[in-house]
Image (cartoon, rainbow, N blue to C red; front, side):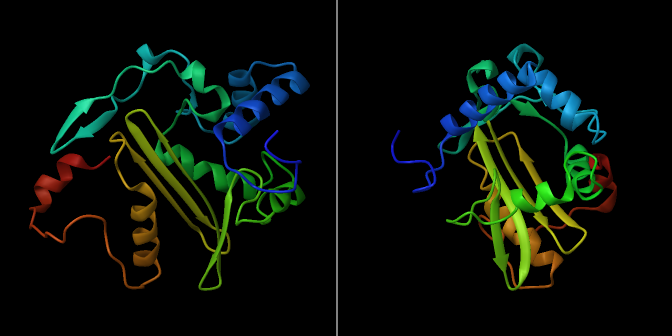
Length: 208
């Protein structure tokens, strides 16, 4: 061990892999089956799962090389195990906080424990934040060809999900900007400020 449990904090994918192994041992179920039975099905997340075989990926991931993008190299998600390898949709992700609030996945007391800062702004698997007296929990992710960010404002009906199939996407910064927009606060989106007018009929082609 790097240090005695509870003495310090160090984020690591290895921690999540160990957690997945413990869950499989205690539940007697494979990781993918446990997620489906205990989380995805109760939450009504029909387009979410654990992707072990990259041949069935729902979207192609890309990495940036200079000004260009190239398709990310194939990655066997079973290597990531419980530290990654999930696929989902923004609509499905919206179901997660609502299901937690409704007690469909965990008891309210357990959720409260999960979202309590244990030091270093981290609870049980979630970053715990309090900006401008707004309580929120969040987490970001990045894997070959993909980036994501999720943020829930606990005292509001506001959940922000960023799902990108470009690995270099600054999903966390986008989430912060969207939260500021939702709260009517000053914001700055990533990249240059370049505004163009797109006719509504063109935008309609991309809805959904």
